[in-house]
Length: 125
Length: 367
Image (cartoon, rainbow over all chains, first blue to last red; front, top):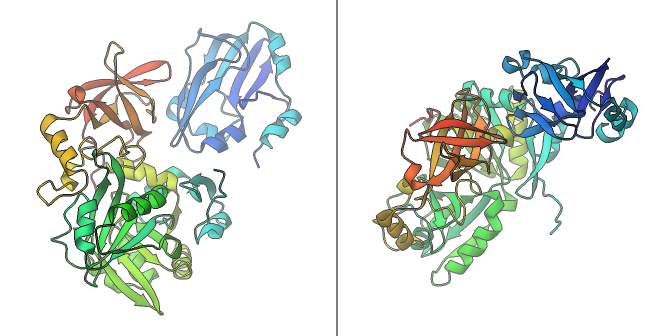
């Protein structure tokens, strides 16, 4: 049974969003990391890159599989978690602590399409 | 074709250990227990055990057994002595691969055991039947009756001797086996494996195999799933049927010509291989080492610097033991020489690499 953190928003492709004003902090859910197994590599965009909701912005690699990271919202990348370059396993250790990128949102209404923790339980419980 | 998944004789024990289970070759198999990296390292540095009961066991006997096996098999079994094992392939007439397999020469004259891939048992058995018409042989698919485990790693000999009570294991040379009886049960104990490490494979009736598995668990041997079976065989440069060998990939293309004896009498696929050797093949299997950490996967394109596609990845990993991104790829023969620069497209970007030997990891077999 995977952990689902309260207070976050979730996408169907198992990314989570923590909203901080106009900034969306983005990571992947505990369900996603458990499905992947040992994560060995995180492919991330550069700061100032634009990401679009529904399109991939990077990827996770585990020993066995690759999985694209899909942007839950659109906007400009204002930060990325460079610690994951050398320690991708941080996502396995705590998927809600190990954020991947921060995006300055261009359209906050895109958040309405995401699920709350209770709704996400239905697909990742 | 929605057949229910088959279960090996150890299935409930895997579930009890909390293994992540997944369909493979028609069986519900353990992919991992503690994690692929942890299990992989246990086999490289200590000892691990795999359930390989899904593998097929086809027995061939009768007055023509030797000539029949030699007719369908690429390697030459004539010099074999009882207790010896040979690796090789069965081919179609055009040189494409039916399967890769082990041939065990049993202690009774004109008796052979063919150990084949789980995904190919039915196909292989039908193929053998079809080819056997002109031969006086008996074919017996006993795959359902045998369990099999593989004990692999530098600690394998000690585990098989001390935990399983087979002191004779110490005297078995690599690619040899003993045919034993324990408590009235026939046990085939062979020094073989698919990991690049020393190790043993044990064949016996399901109850005996369950008891062995339990003794190994009690002795602290790490249970290992198909996940690390693939990372281990990959690093050791060993092919997997379906990826590196297929009906379209001959052993010559796969760089396995040393297991095809073109100087022996007629065998199926021989003339096709002779032609491939003299005229050359369009594509060859190579190893590629990437400069970056991006991971090449099955199906990803292999390119030249300008993006021109010259091949495709068959298996790739960020290697656990070597800590770099590596792959096998089938490429145009013009680009197969060691040292050739090649690029692998991983999603939106192409990453530079170089052709290297397929045996990425220095294997540690006991000769």
